[in-house]
Image (cartoon, rainbow, N blue to C red):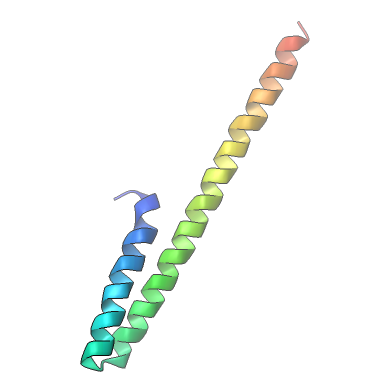
Amino acid sequence: MSNENNGTFDKIKGSVNEAVGKVTGDTEQEGKGKAQQARGEVEEKVNDAKKSFDDAKVDVNGRIDGFTNNDK
């Protein structure tokens, strides 16, 4: 499973764990589910930041290449 999907998977799995914990009255499982959802949110944000950084890096490299090629 790719890193991009891990956040979504954790959020879904956490949601299920939280729901099962609520239905069964298992507060520990409910809490673990909430934590798992939070971890999934963080993973998604980190992946978004990585993608934004990679996109910016490609843009900067393209601008540098354009600048240096115009010098010739």
